[in-house]
Length: 135
Image (cartoon, rainbow, N blue to C red; front, side, top):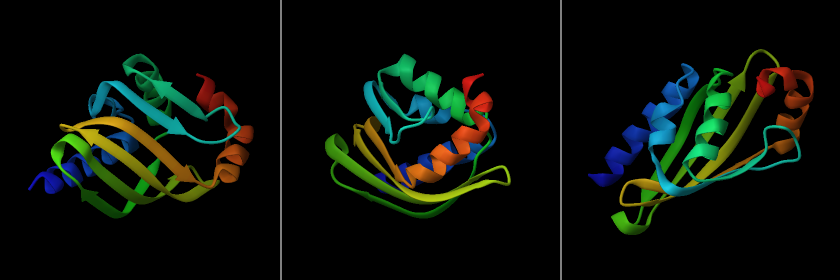
């Protein structure tokens, strides 16, 4: 039952990001949550806490990324739940990627969120569209 709720919340957060709304994603984090987006480019992040996480997700949501959820796996007890999301994403006509998101939850709140994807593809997009991220 709990894993079904997590799957629903994941799908809702991804759909909201595609619509330009960061709130469902941000609300899922614990106050001491941590978010990692890898790479050596303007989009890379190591955010700790609500303010930093909110700022990153609000910028990202403005890009209106399109997502396809390929797989969502949830396991573990509520005080130490893990979730793996395999996704494909697209921004505009010149960026597509696939990746995995690893999430640790404690009592329904994200304490760790780490993205694994082709960082070179992200860096190439960021080089061409840095103005869209910096706004």
